[in-house]
Length: 138
Image (cartoon, rainbow, N blue to C red; front, side):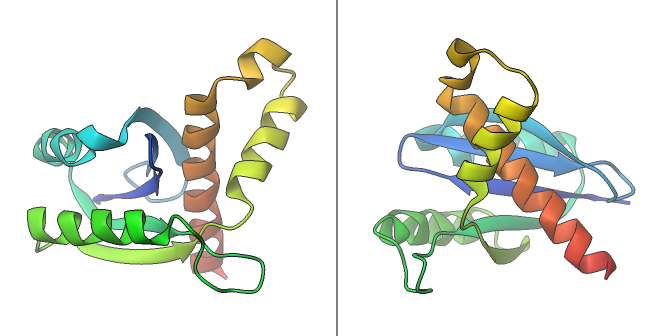
């Protein structure tokens, strides 16, 4: 069974997470510089079978688009052009970064380790993906 990949795209960094082949468990994949995302994904898709890609949709508390929306919309357009056959689903990513940071605290990571913004992005993508899998099972 092909995997599902989640992308937490940001202006500087992009966190990636992927399911296992049974699409049950989400795991952090990596964090990459955002300007290398399409190239990285071309290589990844050549090696792994992916059925669907989830791309975070940043929203403000009132549901309106956030200030980073134009940057992410451009990435979505570039992604769709590079991978026209890949199924893309947008998912609300509100609170994923805060939840990721809290997860790091709960896991006992040191203050220095919690300052690793790349790790926060990877964990945020994992939370986004695991939340999607949970909602899909309900």
